[in-house]
Image (cartoon, rainbow, N blue to C red; front, side, top):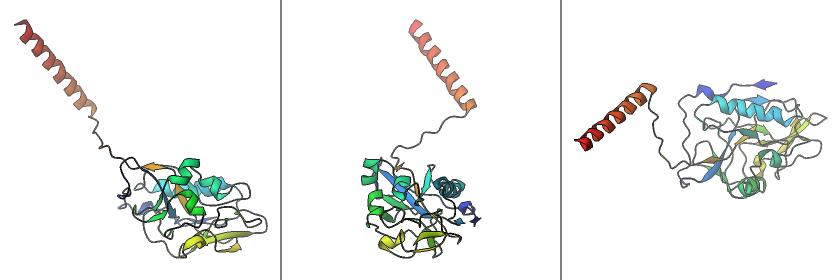
Length: 224
C-alpha cells in the first residue's frame, strides 16, 4: 500500500551540485521519500521502484537511478546501495540541498560515520519528522526476522529526526504501518564544462550556406 504523492508539485526546486566539490568530482544524494508504504513486500525491487517513482517525478533533480536504503531477507542495504568497491569507499553523500554532507562515503553511511541526519525530501524540503522503513541494522544488513517483507509482520525502521547510527536502526514495528523510505542516488559528477547550444535545424542550414559562400569567395580571390 502506498500513501502520499511524488514531490513534483514543488516545481520551483532545481538542484545545484555541491559547491564544495571540484569540477569532475563524484558524489551521491539521499532523501526521505514523501511517498509512504507498508513493509510487507519481500522484493527489494518494490522499494527501489517507489523511490525511483518519486525522484523521476521531481524534474529539479539530476537524472540518475535511485535505490532504497533498505534490506529484505534476500538483499541487504549495503548490497542494494553499492556503487562499487572504490566508489563505496570514496564518493561523498549529500542531501538534496547540495550543501549538507551526510557521509564521506557509502561505507561511512553504514559504519556509524553519519555526519548529519537525513531529513530532507527529494525537493530539499525539511521532512516531516517520521520513522523510516529500513529493514536494517546500522551496519546496513537486515536483522533476522525483521527485514522488510519478513514473515511475522515485523520490520526495522530508522528515524529522520535522530542522529548518528539511529538514522538507520532505531526500533522495530509492524510492517503493516505506512512509513517513508530513505533513497540514495547513483553516482553523479560535478560538471565543469559549459553547455554549448545546439543550433536549430533552420539555423544550422543557414550556417552551412554561410560557410559555403565564404569558401567560394576565397576561391575567387585566389583565382583573381
